Length: 441
Image (cartoon, rainbow, N blue to C red; front, side, top):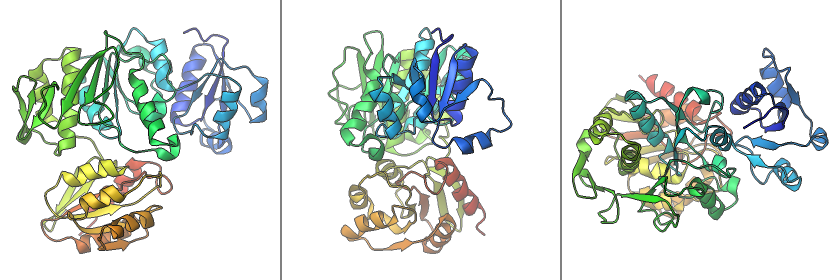
């Protein structure tokens, strides 16, 4: 697109907003920035040249006609500033929407879902890189995808509901929806709104595109879209392209793709991630034998059921990316041993009763801290589980977990909740947990 002389507002000036501003400046746009925390941002970026950027107060927004607004994913649709811009009839878009508009001739493989996005995105990106493809792997946290986009011809994107909500023309060549379960209800306002945001991934897809869906998810097995739909499943069904039928992943002709014993990352949810990734890679043109070789070598991603260490016969796992009950349920179900679970964090208005009911018989002990500790405790108490310890912080949680665990047990950090309020993100939380575990003697 031609941005020369256009007025563009960057709403939210974190890492991705900063990168986007540099991109638009390089294209000759007039770049404006608005952020509620501007004083701190200017202090943090005091050593950088921001002369080409115009920082606006709320009252100054009225004086400029913007071509569009690029919104930070973290800003809620219900916020005052969003309602104000909607009333002004200004187009609001996300970074992946601009990425698509500016690089339509590139290939886009886009992964969304409540859980499994990072693992699936990382694996697909690794395979394509190892095979020599010119691919950019884009997570939904961190640098702007726009800055380096011109250096690649293929983009593998982990897309959040926050980003998809603000897309209009976005059209992946291959899209994956791994699952849809309640999450971010504080942001979207309702599960229906959250589901609709996720499904915007395929709103423009046609017969030139491929949509890969989890047939076991009731929200996904009746999708109507005029595109090529491929299903995967953890249950034996003739309609799907790929099944996990223990102990093997098989294709629709019941040919064995790989045995679970050859897969390092464990758990049915990871087999689902790998089935979705395999279908996407085959559609993209990768040979199955190359995919299988990569599966055997794949060690997973940091902070997702990540083995930390064994001490005195107790195994410690970091699942800090378990930021909702469904993700944490998958982590608990991945083990067939007694678990001492460390949980709690930011409240996204998600219920914990179903998680409590399904996991109470697998837990030796439950250790809670953070904003949601009382809410989680109540959910477990209501299902008859009372071996619960409330602590103040991660350091105390690790210490108590060690004292509760017995030889052969698993100590699992899988918080059920986001990290906000205590940590900057799930990565910081996981790093602290690993540091504390590795300091145990």
